[in-house]
Length: 309
Image (tube, rainbow, N blue to C red):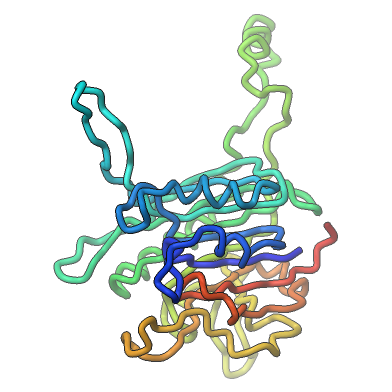
């Protein structure tokens, strides 16, 4: 199974051109695609509906979109009719496997006085994976401040810790003790003939985390190195696929390049990750960055996960 995460910078490429088709070509072939900075109805990108365009270029994928940032972009015609548009910015997930459930999570935000701060989010999806249900996130953490980002990391950890207790989007069964209520339950077709959703054991978080290795936020997510026992990985947190991959010989893992080259900090960084629960550690065969991609100032980060498809 091939996974890829890509901050597409609203399709603005290194050449200054907006191009959804180029983005689609750069991620085509993955089984699961997580995209960040996907927008709708922004003047800079020609008021395009980018989720719809990307889905159109990748018609053999199921998909979902979460615009954490959602502002008014409507207009009123001379006849008084409202043309309703929303100026949106968020994350997207495309999957070769059926997307069984979706939850959308706004991440904690603290108002900023100077630097730009925006609503960011995590799109949680349960996929009908080849080995059973698989929980996958496409997410984008804040770049506004470390304080805000630490709050977001703790929120993600809490989400993960509480996932099994929370259960699926619906839980429970028909009220079999009461024939009248049982008949009403079936008449209303609440379950549509499906069984209660199963809670996956495995979780994958894909996205632009806006943090670098060895930062406090990274350590909170992935554990820390112990002088006696080595890397201390907790069952309620994650492993970095780049670190545990059997093959990561292609490059140094940098996923963001300054554009233009003198943009601070004037050096490439590793900001984009695929984090996995401990049970998947031995399934990571290869991790690599597609440094040939030019559709954004980020590069697609790919992971080859050994699950029979």
